[in-house]
Length: 96
Image (cartoon, rainbow, N blue to C red; front, top):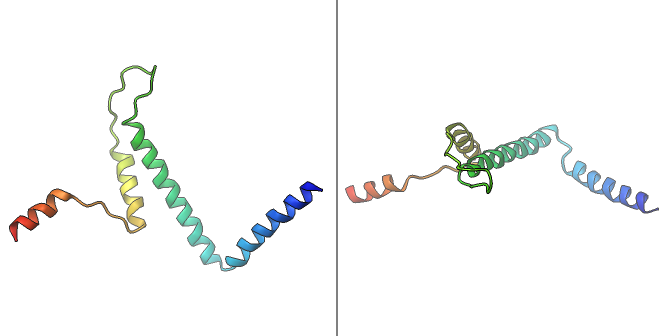
């Protein structure tokens, strides 16, 4: 009896989600958002691993993280986020 209640609840939840996303384009937009978010999380994790020391692993030398950093920056740009360079903005203010 508990399984039927859980199944009904999950069907109701899935049914509610499907009602909100009847349009195929809307489903693709949501799917692409989750994929981009996954890429941002993956790249951020890889970049973070470069700065974390694992005990018992020995001396860790810094790795070249150019590729994950470019993927991270590109994925963030798809969300409309762009990193700023503080040194350039300070120089522009001094020139004015």
